[in-house]
Length: 136
Image (cartoon, rainbow, N blue to C red; front, side, top):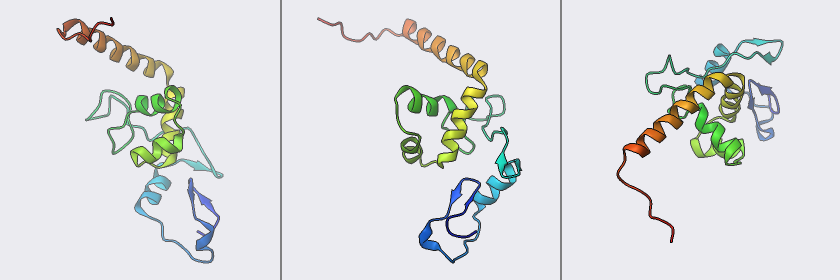
């Protein structure tokens, strides 16, 4: 790879012009996982589904406990830039966009997850004897 080239969303800065960089394990993983055809990736996601997960009952990023719902909430509900979310969670920016794309491509699944979380929140509020202080 040469300076200024983009390969699977990995950019090599200009300051490395003229030098070759060896692909990292992560680069190899991206290349082997991606279905790349004529330079354009298809909509094959690396998101771990809730059914496949051993740590969550909802879709999340591979090798992470960060859920698709959490990423979408921070970007779309809170208005954070995808770059900020990537920095805060120490993620590749591509993973943030992949989570967003997964959310919007699987709306029914994500709505079921949202309903399940809303229902669990309501049940825990009904069971709890703790109440927030009343406004005076």
